[in-house]
Length: 318
Image (cartoon, rainbow, N blue to C red; front, side, top):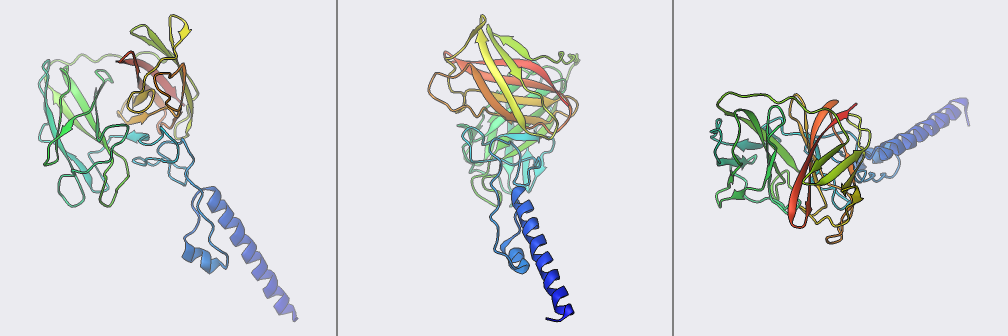
């Protein structure tokens, strides 16, 4: 073989080796090249790694992606990060004629979810036993409400929050289309309304790792870093004794909503702890992915003896 041939052979070997390394790196990130790219490299296609289980709001690349619902682990579907800051995404829109609601009285908030075709969506997947989850919170992160509204045949939803105090409120709709171009993708869209009157802002409570409600104490352990999924452990106790009779609530033993101080970004999580009848607790494990540093107001909901309790605490994300 001529010297030029030797050099060509060496170059081809290096190219193939580099292609193999590149494919392995992409596969490790969960984003292997498409089959036509693989064919051009001269190697068989490498299958994409599945999304890391238990990492809410993460696609296969491992980066936080609002509106992404992971799969593959019970209790993990429907968990998102930093949502509700816009009324429209990917052609889906939260519409409502109401921009102002009265203070101090029960109200009704009508709204529709409009799809990419411009028509109200009427087919929604059931997520955590409901087809739509509705949240309301005031700008100072007080007055939290988590509701499950009803939908009319024409696609009009009606949420009935309890009496609202004066101030600016953000309202969120969490849903997953059951058909259409984004079938199976979770969305959390939000709009603001004004409740007229003199608004007295409440300072955010200090950061702490435990809260007591109705005699039950929830203690949270875990160090969170913005944009990185990590374990968060919640322990439920009563009078210093571990609680082992938690009942399922929305198909899991707890529901955690977290709102970012400042922009009111919403993240909602469910524990990965398997459900086994009315025998939950005392420890529940979440994988939390909060995309912004700073303080988050957390609302942990759990059920005992048929009653839902909501523990409130402030967590800091580095």
